[in-house]
Length: 213
Image (cartoon, rainbow, N blue to C red; front, side, top):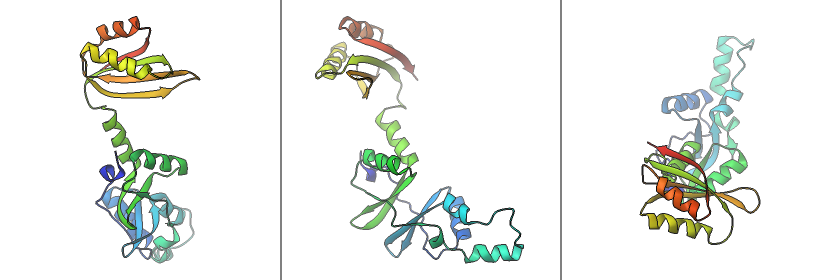
């Protein structure tokens, strides 16, 4: 799954000279928490709601209403934005985008292609991709199998499932302690009792079973 498949392309942007009150209003109106900052077609920064709030005067300020409004009107997005933000290419995978966001502890990335801003991908987009890839909205049965982590174990388990005539919705593996792993399989069946017996007869430990509706 690629970034271009999950990014938001209905972009709301601001210029560096936009005042922070207008930028905040744009965020609230469009229910978003970050804005790409552009000059023409060029991405020059990224600003978040928190960036703008930090620049706003404290409620405990001694400034008059007139002075406060004047200050806010004079404060520009360029004073709050992160210049030259981290970006991701639209042809990158969603997994790459998630890793960049996690490593840099940021909630969204501007998406570029051939030097042009083409979208934005956020934590919400990443969550949506995870939900889709894991088939979380499909009914069925989820089983977790604890295994010895060695070549061929995954092929053997899928062969057992294949012979049972049950369709696999999704399959994921999670590393455990050294030499151990957990395989989580979502199956297109209401009950996997017979399959579980078959897996156990092959020496596998079924650690958890959940019916999903």
